[in-house]
Length: 364
Image (cartoon, rainbow, N blue to C red; front, side, top):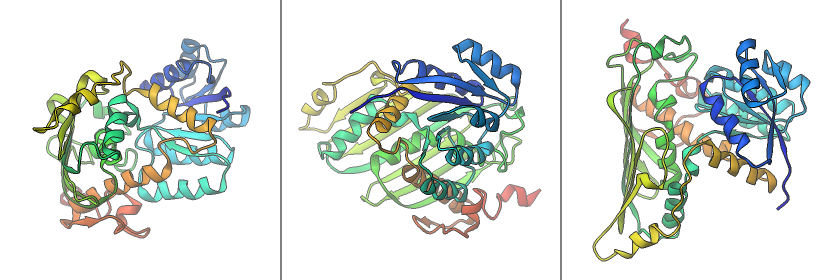
């Protein structure tokens, strides 16, 4: 496998951009951060100075015109992801897009179509897939070591107050695409989907309980998978005791992780079923101190690029997760079960995550 040094830039220098800059710096010379861009020129320059980046620009367009790049890390508010990713593809620059990658399933399909015409790629930043515990679980599950997956739970119960939603782009369908289903719980249930595989049916509720926003502040879903496994998914921004939890019940063991914004092996536990005590030793054989942060994800991106492959998380993988989100909202707002593949290109819930409209908006 040949390695090279990739020229990278960051577009949008808000809070999450620091995780991206640190991931590039930690890549051991495999990537170099050569430029940043932000509509706030002062913030862009301050960010560039902090990380020793030579060039700062006032827009993505200016950056793409001025620099020869391999990678662009898109850390802007969600509404800007699709237009900037399209510009990157046109320039032959691979776009690494923060979550949620697009505002709708239709926007993601537009990116997939544009990707097919480009020499570059689009990948979504879903870094929790790449922590050592998740990698180990997928390996053991894929090998059949744990037996059949029977039941799983995904819980993202966070707390975001009114001050959090004072940022203009938050809490609206037009600029954020949804509430905690889109912007918060996506990490946990994306990891759930990456472990359990294709989902087949969703039944859900989404409600606005306490926050004065356009989007939901709580959602819950019951999910059936093609394998026969079933799962529950909870997403909240109203929970004072914050937690992020996943539990997988297999025939031979229960595997769990509890953390908040990122995990290490210390956050995972395994409880073997009677007669399968050897699984505990097997789980602990390759323990790691690595976290599920951006560093592991970015290393996987660089590995894929070195091998001439599409970087993770690919648009095909992302589409499964985005279709799940659209199905959750469709079920919640229509009161119907929604099957995989049911939301076609002209469906209202493909065009916007609120589809035919959130019930509370109609009541206003």
